Amino acid sequence: MIYKFTLSSEKVLQIAEEVARNLGHNYMGTEHILYGLAKEENGVASRVLKKQNVTADMIFEKIEELIGNNSANHITVLGFTPRTKRMIENSYTEAKKSGSNYIGTEHFMIGMMKEMDSIAMRILSSLNVKPEMIYHDINKVLNELDDCFNDSLSFNAGKDLGSYSLTKTLNQFSSDLTKEAIEGTLDPVIR
View 1 (cartoon, rainbow, N blue to C red):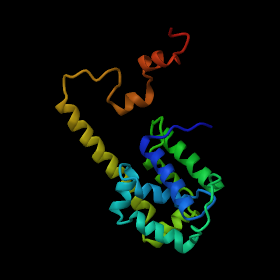
View 2: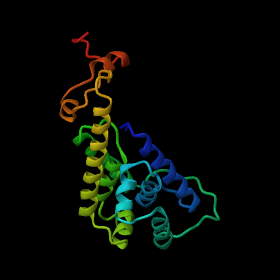
View 3: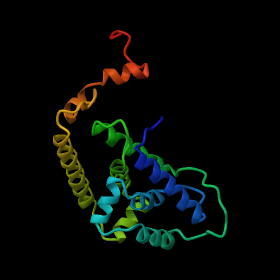
């Protein structure tokens, strides 16, 4: 399956691969993605982790403590662990449930919490982070972002916003026909 990621989520995966390589790990685990979520400061997950007083440095220390550091060896990261693959599948499911076509950092965070036996969740637990607080903070940050977005819309009232609808419900249950026509993916019956 081909997944679509937000720019922040793509950056998280790049950071995760880099830290895995720097630590001499030949795989990318949930712990590396957790580090990437904390390190990539533009994502929702980073804001949530900050609210929980969790930093990338703290996560890095826990990874070294639990897994070790074999940075003397220059290793090629071979791919995701099976648990990390499940975490990404969980993230995809969460994105779809929220009506999003892209996997955001908040979806990564929720997908990670569904893998309770993962190294990432052991790290969060050792840092006294509770999953229910993560869910709460994700909703809080998303609501703050919505409020900020709505404030900017009222400021831009009267300007042409294109064919994109600004209502979540309409976006969830409809398609942007203009976009589909441009991309050539429009249903032949509609053409």
